[in-house]
Length: 474
Image (cartoon, rainbow, N blue to C red; front, side, top):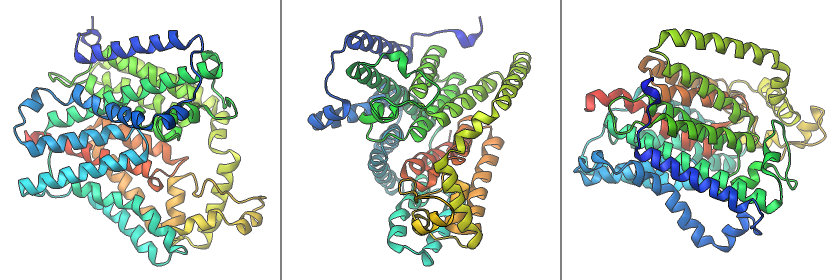
């Protein structure tokens, strides 16, 4: 048998087995309809209990994954505080942006405390300068923005491109510590997906809807609500694209940890397979099209990554992927409809119209909202109403060109190109998955316009860039 298939009764195996057991107990218990109140109503009624549960969900993966022999061999108290702060932040990125900001603040304080204790600051990574250039362009655009108040409000999102890279200049992590932190993120994602599926079972029972009715590959409402709104009531954030982005990244992390050699951070095929199946099930239930695409891309590329040393199997697998690609091209018309629905078409046309009038400088941050919600412009373009919900073009490249002009687009493409070069040069599989997932998302969203996008992308990139120093540190 291939070594990959050997199962060891590790912590991960016990951890995953317990979750599977609880999951099936949930299925059996709620199959007869034992629930009355919705998840949202339960959280309102038992607010303090809900906060305690959130705390347990964020910190339980840390106890499973971080406290190990590596932890015991770390004698520095400030370093332990730093690792706990960073681990808590990574785990919380799966939840609402509010939790991410709160734990992000905790991590920034921990990193500053560590720097003061060590009395040392490290040279910034070259990618950080691209982060700061991107931020600088947005700061300068405040000079000509048509809505300074809105611009200052949006500025807090872009400020993360400064604060997190600075925080990562305060320390350098060892290879074992980075792997431990990634293991915390993977286990946190496992818990997140598991709890979300339990909420699905609970709500399905409460609403009297058979579980099989949720397994569709088209948009379907339940009680006049989208399924992701119902299922993610417990999270406090329900955007399926960003939520699936986070746990799909955890799948890439799991593939990386499966491929580890001679390390206590290695997971086994059983743990990864269960997580992959549960993630795929959740993605289908919440009807996230971009989540499904991201899952398939990471899964396909991940298998190729695992087979990279088995040339005979790899060539056969590549042929199979070409057949799959041919099938996708045949289905191109249905895929094209994904990004060309009426709301997105209106956003694109509005953005393109404005870009033609001011391609060099754009609206400035804050000014884009006025243009996108302008009723006069909507009527001029032939639309009866202006968009009042989606206040930005659902495309990162188009949005930056509209907001900060050509200079903003140059810094964006330069930053992404430089990170892509780094991950290829360093053969950093997780960083490659991160940048690829965000590039796919950027075609239909503006992740850097929202806190949920920046709180995942910037710190995770900074963490993964430290992998290139692991041999020097050790």
